[in-house]
Length: 117
Image (cartoon, rainbow, N blue to C red; front, side, top):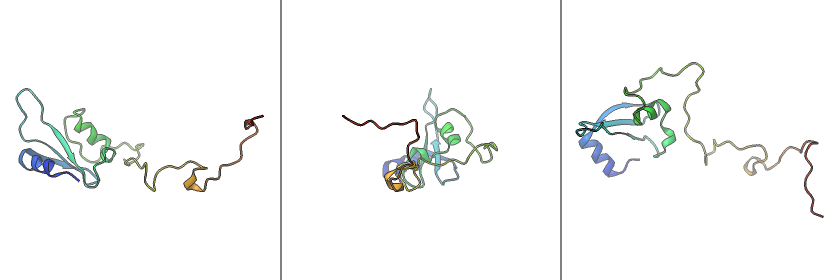
């Protein structure tokens, strides 16, 4: 969640631009300083985690694109955006991982374990 200072800056100098499918809200400065561009920022709906920003909104935040993205820009071959799941129940765990039972499949014939003499 945004801290009190960010909320105050948003209240006094921020202008709401839009919201993404995860509920994150995007803002930019009402007025840019002379010779510079408007600052852009996001207030996350849940925890402050950068991977929760979809790629098209990340491009807007970093001035890669000028217009705020609207829905329907995904191609048919693109998967929906998912935040980084590291450290959560949804994280990938390869076969043999301790949290997946710790049992690996047997080694194939091309592998021979080293044995000290």
